[in-house]
Image (cartoon, rainbow, N blue to C red; front, side, top):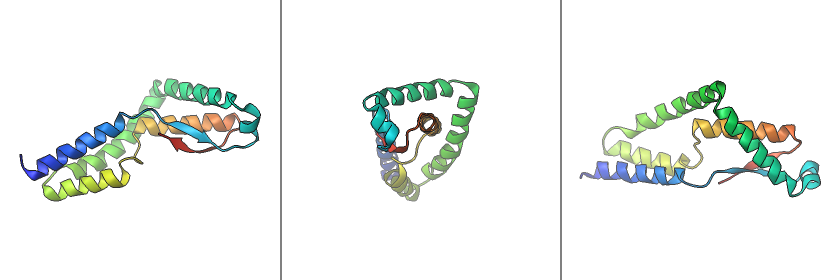
Length: 129
């Protein structure tokens, strides 16, 4: 096996392992709604996550996720093919943005959940993995 192929396989394994982590959840800013709801805020988060998962199964949700995925995939596929230089480029991409790059489905899931929580009076400050 040549070195270029070994590098490609190593980074593919790393990328697949990072996808197997537990689902992410939003972190909330402790505004008045958060303080008033207390432990019930976790139930509100769970409800919004369920609603986002249901939305992703609709034709509109699937279309949005697919659209976001196709723009991400075209970039990563272009970097992944070639000789040793592209293997290094892929490694930089995985190390640099591998954890911050979200699938189209995850982008839609987070956006939907954020809006759902805003509608309930919360403020989302970030997402935990």
